[in-house]
Length: 408
Image (cartoon, rainbow, N blue to C red):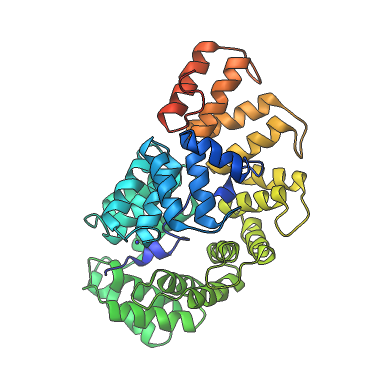
């Protein structure tokens, strides 16, 4: 998904946005197989092994080992590992916190068109952590991420331009008008005033006023203020870091129907941060956000149905949610949907459909999808056999860190 903070960065879930294994197919190799392939220096397996240690999947959670395996994979060019390595530096897990190193690894991922890496680069530019603060650079990277369907980037772009078209041309009049309304108890004005004192060039930034006005707005039930206030506690920006309080504020926002807060709660329950880990609660909150069209929540809901985490496995429902998310351009969902078509899970086996969805993911920079496209061209599955195209796509995969058969 990171001390001067940028409230708009809090507007989207987990700025140190991980390339969650939850967003990958359920039938990935088990731990021992992944470990064996990783020890054979396969970059993708090294990334997967790092992720297993990162979240404690099939093995005791160990951030130091996650860092070790991410570094091996990232050094070979795997974009997902690069992004997650940046996240470990960002939060100081398994390694000493270092925003500059976080930015360095996020940027490597972003330059390979990794959606989450692009979002995280934008976030660090927005906050001015690990790199000189620049709203224009933040906007540039958010735009790249948003173009690939990232909801968080879209929200942060909106907040960067919060009501600018509707404000009086005179900045002093804007502040005067908002202050008057805020003092009269208008929660929306209190929220916007807090944002202005945080990031506007038209008023001197003032952390105490940011906290004052956002607190007042949140206590009045202003849904976005509650969301932002929760994020402030999650990241420890302007207040002491407190996952429990973050969860409490996000829940208030989520119960009012705010999809980003609902998705965040799903993440917290799935990871056990600030709350006891609960697959059922994660499912419930993902489902609420997914029904509102939240692409990441739709994809994660699909994975839960595919894996049967806390619920009965249902491939048909997994396909349905992957399809909704993939239609919004989420790379992980495109890959997952392709895998379902390839293997005939929840849908009739259809190599042509599988090829089409893998291609969409590969064209957005997904290295494993590029590898699969290469193999499909090589064997003529779902597409006319074409050895030259196979070589092109397999080379792209190898260049992005998937080492399987790179030296065939």
